[in-house]
Image: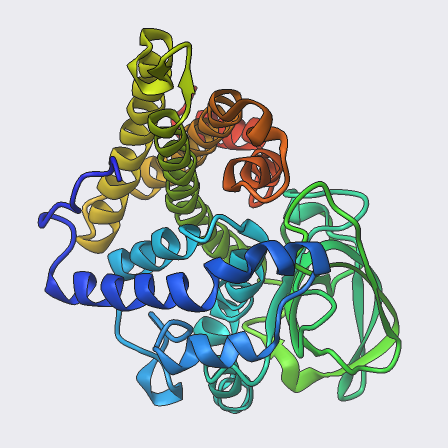
Length: 389
């Protein structure tokens, strides 16, 4: 391993104890099986419960609902250690509750929290977030899916696409437009829709990467959703999603750095073992420079992520600056992942083109990291606005 021991400035004994537990779990319960799961385009649902048993699913959620006390760095440990398996699809599906559940935890009614949060944190139920539509991605203000009030229910019509855990999810947190006369951010609401709601159809999607993760297209046709499933205030859901995106982007950044590290580690291991013309690849200057460039990009991105996490944890950041720098961190970290995946495949040569190596899988998966949660172009534009450029 080329990564340095985590700095005590950021990580304390509790973080490292959790890291050791999770690292052992991933090595035993996930990494040996990811190739088979990828080829099968699924993984055992039982894995959610096993993750819950070691306290992974509840980090940062209220203990009253089965959560576990944990700060921003505990979540970063989670992102980093899960990435060691080298399979983004498994990580994405197992972590879909981290974007589907926060709106419920932050703005849901007491009854809704009690009904939804505990079974998800126990690994018995699956939560997903549905914002993206065929007509638009990260532009939440352009949501077209309608939810019109009819007595004690909303009637929901519309489509969502590219939804992680979309096929399996028992609870779907959905962005809807409850004021059809409104435009832009006003009129957006958040609804919790049960996966077995009549009128909801789900279609699996084939992807370049993340094969083990079910990704679905959702169609809502006259779905009747109780008004009690409204999360927060009607027509004021836009801010809820913006808060959600900031958190998602920060932890995607941490995970992208960790995936880049996986590629570097595989490349170093191969370079030390592979002999060409009488010498290991690792002794050739051109290869050594490639490896150093990989390490440099990882360190630069990871340092920004850690510093942002520290500022969030200690409430040191100006809100606008924070939004801008989280957006920039996502760009920097996913670019580092892209570079490292590309260089690792190059160093592995023919083996880098073969299914079964982590670098080959991550080479295919890096694009979804650069697009999901906000594309690189949108992140730069968002940062520019926040910085007054």
